[in-house]
Image 1 (cartoon, helix red, strand yellow):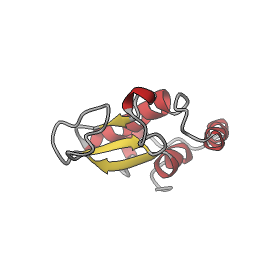
Image 2: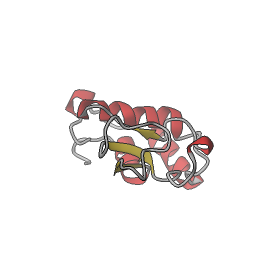
Image 3: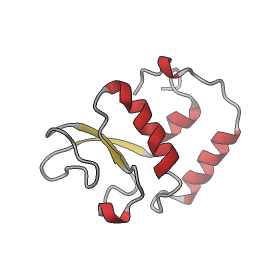
Length: 113
């Protein structure tokens, strides 16, 4: 992942965002899949909480692989700071990563998602 993702996206992929498959028992509890067995992304820290108690963008179902990056970016911008279930130490780590200067990898090269 480090070859394709900058440290911030690597952090989200390893510490926050979880990939799952929607089924009859777990339809996403918020965002809804278009089809059974659709792959979704969700916050690994609040997945156990009812959707009414979670911050926005806790679950997404990208319609195609090219939308995965956008889903993670929306998670980063909307959900991460608002989620009360993400530990403070992860939020501190994120802020530290955001302050550091990294070589930015152009979005069109990000194929690891």
